[in-house]
Length: 196
Image (tube, rainbow, N blue to C red; front, side, top):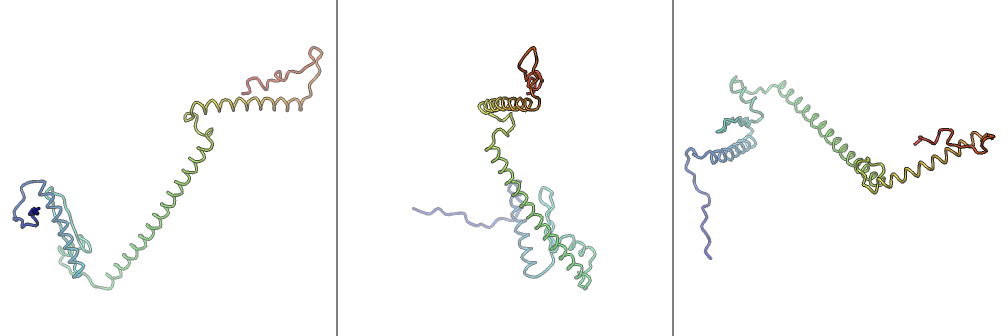
């Protein structure tokens, strides 16, 4: 079986690309390659560099070492980079401040992660407790059989409370003997009717 010949890397004719789609893709790839080469040049030679590029759509892209503004200011004022000890002291102070701020940021991010984990565990505990005690769930979320069971339990509770309150009332006030009736009706006290 014969191997198909591939186009491989071919030399591109250097002329303006006509198709807008191809133009944008080429610009994006070449821009990143340009910025990569500039970064390598800074690293290898220890130079300061600034590159400003406008895309075909009019967007501005820039690369600078140490930063674009510093290099542009130096270019327009034609002042060489100060090498004084005061400048180095300011740079050292800025670096120390940045390190301190980064440390604070890291600590805050760690605390945020801890709080998120704590919140997740509390949510799990809440969900777990709702699974164990279905009657603590909002009534709107209960199934029909759960509602019936809750109703039966509440009726049973009402009976027990009524019996207990009647027993307590009998202990507090002994029944008076009425000549008209020999029994005392607990319901006449008004505690049971309409209590629940």
